[in-house]
Amino acid sequence: MDVDAYSVMHRRSWDRLDFLSRRGKLTGAEAEELVALYRRTSQQLARLQSHSPEPELIAGLSAVLTRARGKVLGTRSGAWGEFGRFWTQVFPAAVYRTWVWWATVGALFVLLSAGLAEWVRGSGAARELFGIPPDNSEITAPGGAFETYYTEHPNDAFAAQVWTNNAWVTAICLFTGVLILPVLYMLVMNAVNIGITGGLMAEAGRLDAFFGYILPHGMLELTAIFVAGGAGLKLGWTLIDPGRLSRLEAVARQGRATATIALGLVAVLFVSGLLEGFVTPSTLPAPMRIGIGLLAEVLFLLYVFVLGRRAALGATGDRTVHSLENPWQTTPSTR
Image (cartoon, rainbow, N blue to C red; front, top):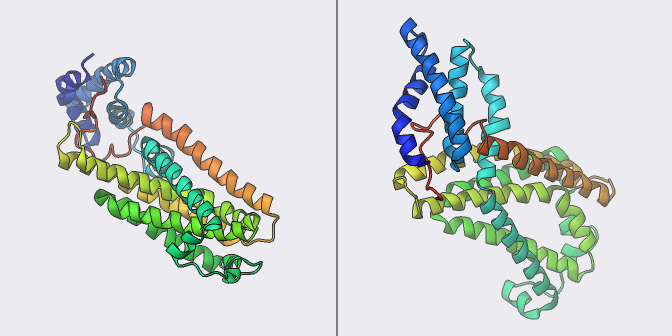
């Protein structure tokens, strides 16, 4: 099947179905037309699902049918319905669609941090390059600056502070992504900071404390930053390679997806802020604190790769279906 030709052939009727689905009160003739278009489009969607490799085409058309079905049945989704749809379909689908980008960012970030940590631990040249003084006991000793950073402020105030800071970092990664270089700079600087700190703690024989304080909140927090960085870089790459769409249309579409991710990450970072404010500095044993952080990370990944994959590839919705003029417009074909 030539998906592009099929889409062009039926786009007018799909546009009409979407228009009628969004209207308020319909005349008798319009109601009959709505039902007929709904039935015909359902059959066309079934055919596309069996032949088309274009997930965004299927997702956009599915969303139009969902809206039309609500109109046919005389139901309307209220604010709570839209709220639930955002968290169960729109946001996880947007994150899932960029997973290759943010997984790559995460892998490179970890490799850079680990490499720097190893270099700082065993190299005087690294210390000289980064201006690290010979004596770092104020940072690495038990009760030093590394540990007191997490305990010197009240838990709730500290949680709010890190939430605000992390939200700012992810916002920079997301919305300067179109320029690419600011995102790369932000990610590299964060990797350098973690690498240097890890190297100093390793040299002091305190890697257990380093991971005990970093991992409870850091797994989810860094994943959110990776998602932001990956989505931002994808936005920048869309400007370079817009595919079959015009550059303006492609960037606008990816920009809406980026805005969706930005909104959803606010909640993810809120959870990581609670972990950093209340779990990381707690008196719980380190394995228990790390276990809580690991649980939060696993739940987020399951959320993305189960709900997000289903929404992105199946019939549950698209990240921007409510704002796309032509939600079934295809992306570059892989045929």
